[in-house]
Image (tube, rainbow, N blue to C red; front, side, top):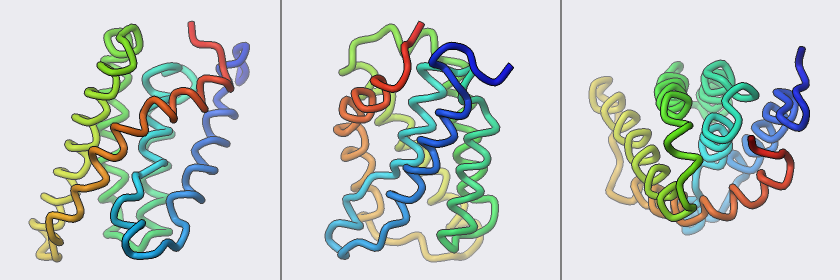
Length: 159
């Protein structure tokens, strides 16, 4: 029921928790600006490459964990993660068959939608929307997508 070959939901949850720890590490200011959201990259990977193992629930739970542990407005990341997880699952057949460069473009757009959603929620709730530096992790995450797929791809065999 829970394990389908190497597309185990348990594996998806474990890698998401590891990415959560790596995302919440205290970093120097210059590195924190560039540090990509590894949780989102991991959730996008599982939603794209093995949607049965990931699912919308893992996206919602990861976003809620970031809200609670990161001190953000409750539901902000959960909404953005759920939206992107849904889109990734709906488009997974189109995305995972593409070369890694085209997948990185999809990830760039997904990270841009994620950051734009957070920016809009911050603006609507009269919170500081920050400076343009908040957008720097978007291209960095897209550049790191081949590394993420290489590392996580070793853990399971895509269909």
